[in-house]
Length: 242
Image: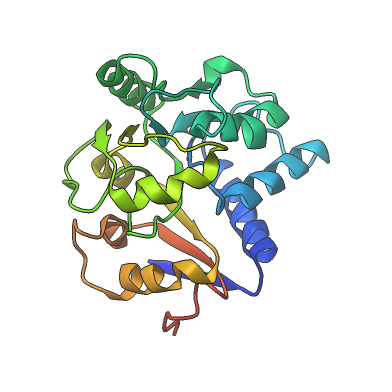
């Protein structure tokens, strides 16, 4: 586990973007798994800027979904796909054939099979970008989720249901989702966890310094050979970084 701390969210986003590009350029037809949410948004903004300035070519990049709310897809404002369309896929003009994203309105088990098949065909995930929930979840792998699960239908923890309302203009029922499993994420060649803000400082400390347990899913990533956590100073405020 490697921990990188910067003074500001913008600084950590720039560093994470630079590192992501360096990693992705090591592979042919690379596959990146992308999370929605506030923390990685700055990284995506940096990638888009690099492409617009002709400093980066992502025409050979492939993109896999991390998760999606059940009953939603890219047509629903507030869905994971909606946000990534806005922040990443549309600005980068990524062709649909290079994206494999969970469709929460389709047969969810079939969606799991299709995402896993896409990952397998491309030889595995090269870089996985993930965020951290207030309860320690990664994707929609909620506390207590088995570490041996691959892509699966998830029951959403009440803490996540409440936190997820911020993405919607009106209250939504967020009881289920579909997500890459911890076993799939652990097979990625590199895992990047981005966390920002003081409200996440407590859970960051538990993930970094507490017991490794399925009750704290993100802590399991500490067993990954190439796991890097990017924190702004607020998120890192309770961590002992040596």
